[in-house]
Structures are given as structure tokens and as C-alpha cells.
Amino acid sequence: MPDWLLDVYVGILNLDRESLSLDFDLGPISVDVSGRSVFFFWVTMTLLALSGIAVAISRKRELVQKWTTWVLIVPVVGLPIWFGRGPTAVLAIVLALVAVREYTKLVGLRPWDSAILYALAVVYPLAAWQTPSLLALAPLVVLLCALPAILSGDTADGVSRSAFSGFGSVWICWSLAHLVILWEDAFVVVFAAAATDVAAWCGGKGFKRFGWARRPLSPLSPNKTVGGLVGAMIGAFLVLTLLGTISVGLLIAVAFGGVLGDLLESMIKRRAKVKDAGEWLPGFGGLLDRIDSLLLVLPLAAVLM
View 1 (tube, rainbow, N blue to C red):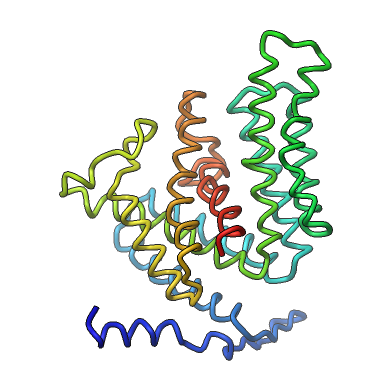
View 2: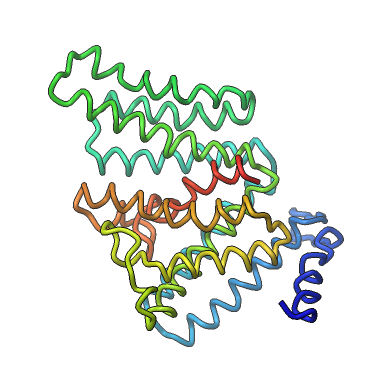
């Protein structure tokens, strides 16, 4: 690497991200905050503004829908994390409940199996807030998810019911509880995962002229290619550098966890023979379609950061 480029990179890493402040009054609402969160706020607003201009120029309805949805998602996710660990737990609960609803429909779980997942969607984030050590009981909870099938004596579908319940308890409820575990770094991880999703899409499109880049990572999703993975790695590197949180562990969690998370949901949707997990998020489908990468990124980041 040339010395000048290394100097630029080091300069970006050493940017002062703590001294910025945000101070304004809007009627009864008074905001006076400073520190790293303000830096993240301005980075987010700047990227939304720049992408909004690009989307407006493109005039593509699909991109307009996606951008509009992102504008709505940013405050819904960002504000609870900004306000504290308790509101972050509430955010995790809401996300988990909606995701469980979509998941149970995809895999066709019965009411009692679904009830366990709905309960865990509340219990896991609360445990992460009040007693984080309880999340270590996840393997035991997976086994307990077999209770409805065992008590009903279901020999025909009991194994598959238990497997889908146990998997959902970890994939959705336990994973989203890591929003609370990470808390102070949660927005960084969520933002980086979202930006890396975009970078993976750009990599898949931009590198498709090369034969190696067009190779699918898995038959589950022909659109998830080696080029997309390279784009995800480059995007994760750039965004984590900009945010000043670059590390080998976090780079692996965001880049590889995001791509694998997409493929994991693709496997479930292929089994259910559907394109999207839902239809209520314009341009994205369902909530699972939006957070699938995050469901692997969060626990990986908690371990590797």
C-alpha cells in the first residue's frame, strides 16, 4: 500500500468521533447530546440524503420503495438504541414477535409450538437486559421446544416440529436478544450489516463481467454469488473503517455472517416455495427478508468484536 494511501486510511481511523454534539429545541422536545452517537447520526443522514438523490435520478419505482422504507426503518431502530438498554430490549421483542409470526407461517408450526416461540421472543430480550447469563441456557431451551410434540405423542411430525421450533428459538429469539447484549455497539452493527447488504448487491452487479464472480455461492440462491461476497467484504471494510470500529472479528461477522444469513433464509423460503416471507414492507417483502443477515451478524459480532 502506498504511504499516502496508508496515511489517508490512518487519518480516517483517527477521526474525532466523540466531540460532535446535537443541540436543538423543537417545541416541547429538547435534544442535547454529544459523543459517538451524534457522529453515527450524521453519517446515517448523509448516506440517506445521497442515496435519495441517486434514487430520484434513477426514477425506478422499486428503488424508491426501498429508500422510503429505509427512511422509516432508521428512526424505528435507531431511537430505541439511542435511548438505552431497556428501549432496545423492547425493540428486540417487537422485532422478534413479528419475525416469529412470519417464520411460523413459513414452516407451518402448530399453535402450541408457535406459542413457545412467541414466549421466547419476549423472554430472551428481557433476559438479555436483566440477566444476560441466562442466554447460555439456549441449548436447553432448544430441547424444551420438543415438549408440545412429546406431550401430544406426535410420532408422525414430532421430530420436524421440534426441530423447527428449536431452530426458530435460536435463529430469531436468541439472536435478536443480542441487540441488547451489544447495546452500545448495536447501531454500529445494524448499520454496517445494512450497508454490507447493499455492497453485496453492488458487488454482484459490478463484478458480473468476470466469470469467477458469477459463480453462485449455493444453489439455494443463484443471485448470491462470489462477486456479491467480495462486494460484501469490501463494503464491510469501508463502512467499519468510516465508523472507526474496524476489527478482523467484526469484519468477519458483518461480511460473512450477512451473506450466510441471506442464504439461510433462502433455504427456508425455498422449502415453503415462496419468494418473500411477507409483503408489508414495500420493496423488501417481510421483516425476515430485511433482518435475515442480521440474525447471524448479531451473535457473531457479540462473540468476535
